[in-house]
Amino acid sequence: MGDISEPRTCRGCRAVDDSTTWRGHPFGALCGTCWTRTAAGIDHEQAEAEGSDAPAPPAPPACRACGREQDRFPTGYGHWVLLEPEVQPAALDVPEGHRWVIGHDGCAVNRVGGSPPPCCRIAHRPVCARSPRPAELPRIFLAVWELNAGYERRVRGRDAPPSTETPPFTGEADDRAGDRPGRMPHNPPACPW
Image (tube, rainbow, N blue to C red):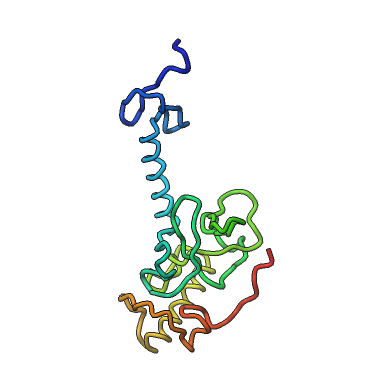
């Protein structure tokens, strides 16, 4: 057996170098460059799966599809997520993998495993009025989607279905939607936690 300090061969690029270390299963031994690429790819896949593809600041925190302002938070893996404003359902009503909580550092975390918090936030993407109606998700998602679709009908026209073109973000208040553009016209009580 060789000395444990001798360089290893990278499983990704086959380079022999001192930065190659064991990265755990299923990655094996990878050099620093290959590990960075792998971690970035995993982070991107996680962002796609969770819907955390929001525009980063200084862009406005508006949905690319419907143009409505949302609450934007950074994630722990370098992406941004838009969360539904003013909607904080009981976490037990939201399936695992869709429960977003805001940490003490201001980062949004998608809670999976462990005991759920009393309430949580939900991402805007699955309940955007311009996305398909969420048939496979629980009733809370359908209810929020219906609220968003109703807002679209009120703003875009009484009988018009949600449009597919993205309106420009003006930043001006809309009297029909409360004091901020894109907001629901009501203020539910804050989450007790």
